[in-house]
Image (cartoon, rainbow, N blue to C red; front, side, top):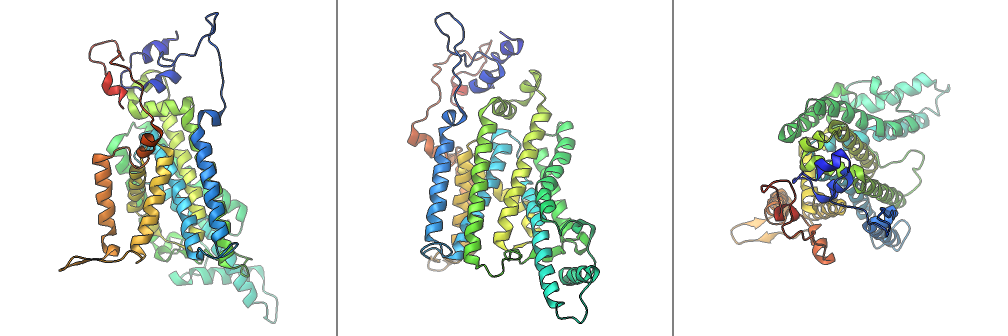
Length: 449
């Protein structure tokens, strides 16, 4: 038995699945008649049937919405609601990122919506630049002399930044004319910010509530900076008109909304598969071990800070991609979207859906997002109580906060925990077996976690 296997067998706080992959005796391979371990490798999808179920459900959902849409179908579902569904899929994707970093790795980040917003800003810069360029070129087409590139560029800058009293392009718009570069920045900017921030925080061994406060401070600082007019991103005005795709002015929004629905569904499906792959192997067992008992995993010789930095950066990239798909459907992005409260909402979604379950994060984000649209969109009827009438537009946040408290107290597994009851999933029955070298080791208590 390897040295770390002997140690992992003595870790009461680390679950059996973690001990299995870290080398402990919690999960021994079956042996053949000769006593040798019989290797029976199984494929990824065979070990994770829920992934295929999710992909199938997502495909059926996307096909059904397409058939019922105004753009390509029967016209039963309005264009605005198709956009709402597409945006909901993007929120489900960023919820998966939050579940990876919090539910599996134990890092309660209150700043992941900042990465989501940065992804939106990166693609929004190209959309606004290119759309404005076409308008300026068209307006100068009837001039006596053909406009020079400098005149076109000055006209674009005046159109975009005139609202904040400027007429020159800031340095951050240096590559706004190039779609490939801006698409690369959708990944690079959130990933680089997360890499630098995570390296500084994790190398200092900042954990727990202090790390959450730091991530929230990072988000607040970024939002306050973007609110300034000289930030280069139009301050409080943000970037608008993002739903108008350059060169596709003749294409109706009904059709464009279906295209974005397809793109959002594809990104969500790939994100789900990636997240399931990350948490299904040895990497997943290590990050769960970090969540359960970081000090013990470090004692085994694993570079805890490296694993945490990888997950933090990966989830920031996923959040950035989700934001790049979300804001062209929303049509506008401003610094208020990056405010710390948005990241707190994200944590609430994951908690309600059931953290530590990828499908739970998707369920929570979809459930709360659609319910929020119903309550705050004026579709929910007012509730008369005699002397007072409850208007759900005003009381929605109270209802959301109350739901979060109730789920935390009475249903810590969230909505996703209901699937365990339906599928009759049960934890291993250890019958009080020793889980450590002394009488103080967890037994039945650990078996129920």
